[in-house]
Length: 140
Image (cartoon, rainbow, N blue to C red; front, top):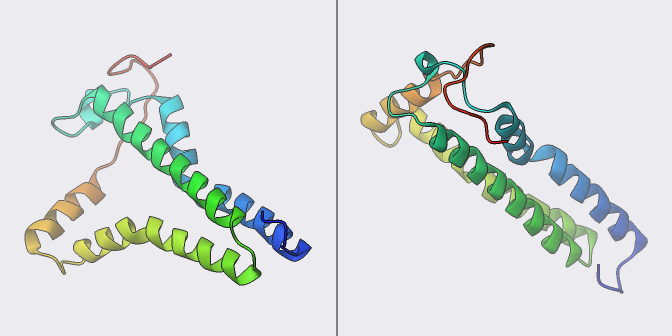
């Protein structure tokens, strides 16, 4: 934090940094799914699925979560007033929510019927985890 900030801004900045880690679930979910590994049975995977796609998708999600945490840290550490802290955090939260807004918008059919059907298909896809053999090896 800059030298000329009040103790209240320092406390709020610390609280926002903790809140950013807890609230942004992408990083924690990606690490958890990478630890669990891919589904155990090919029958639960959609057509065209591959183990490298599983690992790549969660790796990208983990990178995105890490970059978000870095951005929050940089912006919060540059804040000099309480209002700056709140505005920076709100702006970053909005930016990370844009993809969810776009998906919800498309799922309601506002883009096109073909996109709505694709969103419905993606939403209906469930990946079950079963005990037993794996489809591919876990990365150790």
